Image 1 (spheres, rainbow, N blue to C red):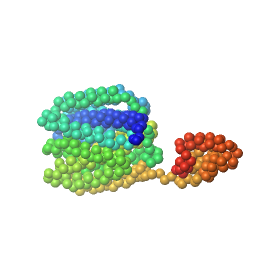
Image 2 (image 1 turned 90 degrees about the vertical axis):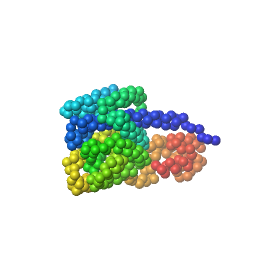
Image 3 (image 1 turned 45 degrees about the vertical axis):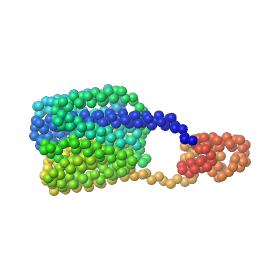
Length: 462
């Protein structure tokens, strides 16, 4: 006879899947129109100014504005946690973001394009703060990497498919704004329609509390990881002008994101180590970047491995944010520190472009520093806490306190541990056997055990 499915378990599973799907779709849509809006702004700048200027205007200053937006959001949440629960604030941020995208893509004046573009990037950061907080508070820890990686992967593929429209020029034209407007409306509709659920339970890293020093160390780790990646992965905008497609390369980004999501949820430790292993790639990027015809291959491989870095830095701070309700404001700080590292890495690449030996040396120093800081963080977060060995008396005392066992029940329990029968317990405590049975039933009920064997096993596992 087949066991009957537990309806409560089915309902919980269904609710979890629904919540994960809703969050994944919202994250995917937000990333889709913010990232493609950013690309349209880059393409527009390439039309009105030199490619060498676009490098630092977008991949340095633009990234810093995104980081500033996340910081502003985090400070607002820290000051008033209820800010997270306001759908109207999320919707307002999305609407303002789209409003700034429009002139940043249409206006041909360089100054105006930069002003509106930087305001757009600032709002990109605030919107990211909202959806990364959604990831931290609404998605269980065991699904968080897959939900985030899957959402970003879906939006990366969608971005590539959109780029194929209008003879592969959609993102470079004003018509892209119509598509962005549609996605924005869908995103707002989903946010308004989504029913609030109880935030997921707090988690911990192998029983360790998170201090301000640990958060700072995590931020430094993410910044160094992103910096090392940025130095090796930097390519000037001239490469885009010469035929490399950002959107096509980002389709391969999806592969790395999906793999990183699976590995990260299987084991946070494996996900972290995979991220560190991916940093070996910048050396190859620098060494081979001058080879004729190799640029496209490097872009593809770079984006695949970048998926592991993206998932690691975001999920690390999502997990930290859920260890304590007072830390919810740091949910987006993984991306914030990452953007700062990206900006510094890109700036280094711009300033030292063509100086291969110097770039390799700087990249090597950054990698060594990242390696050291990374394992300091690894030991703080992922290495298990060694528990002191308890004596039998300490285990028994903790067991009695945990299950609220009374003094008389404690006397009965001690005799059960000694192997005494009900009759022997009755004689030693000068009570009837019925009274003994009454106390035994209470002990079993309080401890959730079916019989004495289970009771003794539970005590030994205390």
